[in-house]
Amino acid sequence: MPKDSEHNGPKHVAVIMDGNGRWATNRKKPRLFGHHAGARRVKEIVRACPDVGVKYLTIFAFSTENWKRTQTEVAGLMKLFRRYIIREANDLLAEGVRVRFIGDRVRLDEKLVALMDQLELLTSQNDKVHLTIALNYGGRDEVARATQRLAYDVQAGKLKPENVDEETLPRYLDTHFLPDPDLVIRTSGEARISNFLLWQSAYAEYEFIDTLWPDFTKDIFGEVVGRFGTRERRFGAVLA
Image 1 (cartoon, one colour):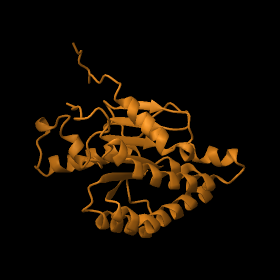
Image 2 (cartoon, rainbow, N blue to C red; image 1 turned 180 degrees about the vertical axis):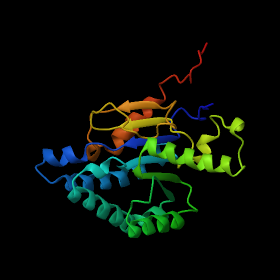
Image 3 (cartoon, helix red, strand yellow; image 1 turned 180 degrees about the horizontal axis):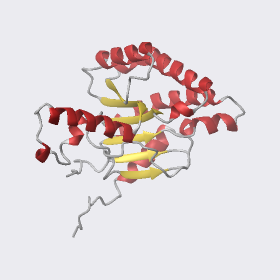
C-alpha cells in the first residue's frame, strides 16, 4: 500500500521529457539540436531537486519504441548519451548524484553499456539525489522481462506460485531499488503516459503541461512540484 511522504512534496518525480524535436523544428533546426538542448535542461533540473525536496528523479530518455525513428536521429541520440555520460560524470559525482539506468541493455551499443556501468559504479556511494535514466525502456517490456525472471525462479523452486502476489513482482522490476513515483510530469502538451512506469505509477499523480522540455526551467519544475502538496491522495480510500 503506498505511503505518504513525511513532507507535502513528492519524494520521487518521474518525467516524460517530450517536445525536443518540436522545439528544434519551431526554430528551423534539426531535431538533434532539440535533443542537445534537452540534455542541458536535464542538468538544470537535477541540480534543482534538493531545493524542492525531491530525492529521486527518473527521466524517460529513450523508449523501446524510439528505434522506429530515423537512423540518423537514433544514431545521434546514442552519440549524445555517450557524450553526456563522459562530460557529466565528474560533476554528477561531485554534486552527490547517484545515477542508475533502467531498461533492456541488450540492444544498446557495447561502448554505451560500458559507460553506463562505469557511471553507476562511480556514483554508487552518492545519496543526495538519485537520478534514474530510462534508456531503451518500455513499461510492457519491463513487466514481460520481470515476469520471465519470476517464472525462472518458480521453475527453480525458489518461489511457490501460490506465494506470488502484488508485492512479489516489483522485486523483479528494473526499478526494484526505487520507491514508486509520487508525481509523473509530461511536457509538451501530450496527455498520455507512453508506456512509462506502468506498474509503478498506479497511484502517482500526473501533471501534463504544455511547455516543451527544452523550455522546462527549474522555476516551472518548482511550481509543478509545489502544486503536488495541494492534492488529496486517497489511494482508493475515502478520507473523513
